[in-house]
Length: 352
Image (cartoon, rainbow, N blue to C red; front, side):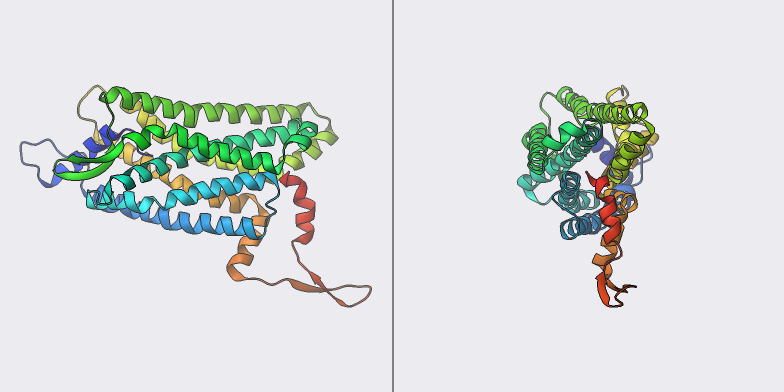
């Protein structure tokens, strides 16, 4: 998500100036091929891998997984948000490569808004999944009555509505602007840098700091509950934390790894006093931008490595594997048998 647009334009201007600089001009921060070649190539890889990964994730969960289980509702919501985000990347990639925007102001607003909504919906969904894990493990009796499928669907709808509301500034102020003879899609804030800086702080708190506080509180509560239980209770509750709990933790850890550098750079930008940023800051900015965009394409990797059933179903989807036949010892007649059936039955408690 491109937040600090003023400094982004400055970086781009400094890079473009490399082609027209004279002896008395200050050296450009980065060569022009950084934004015209490296970034488009990276975004292209992210887009293709994200479309394939999240598309397969949706197919696998809709085809094989029990969509009537609450955790799977949240997983489908997260994969849908990531897949939607991928459709906007080609437009941003073109702007980086061509150094101009040709798709009109309406598409500019839509792409920037979807860009922001993906960030909010993703972390909001991870927060909801963490709260869901807390309720399922710490308040198991209460959750049996209140953690319903309809409640999970309603929460996902509320998350999308909330993401739309918090990105209203992007809907309003995203527009095509002319910069040094180029038409670009950007955010044109009124009142100069004041409103832009406020929006950065507001986004940092709403989409990063506050959700991580809630997530941390949920898992501290879970671990505290497991530590207080008897040995038998701990063993039983640990199995409930199992696959879904590990998957959520891995997804949260991936989110932090991908987004913490981005927010660190954004906050550093707010403290800059000099007019010309350093080369290291420019490198850090574009690196953090790439990492934040990569998050949406890496979530399917989390599903693959944290859930054995997902790996099995993914293999069946890709290679159309057929169920095998097993000869029973007593009656010696062929019985249709699927190898993962028993594992799914035993593992159902992990997907509460």
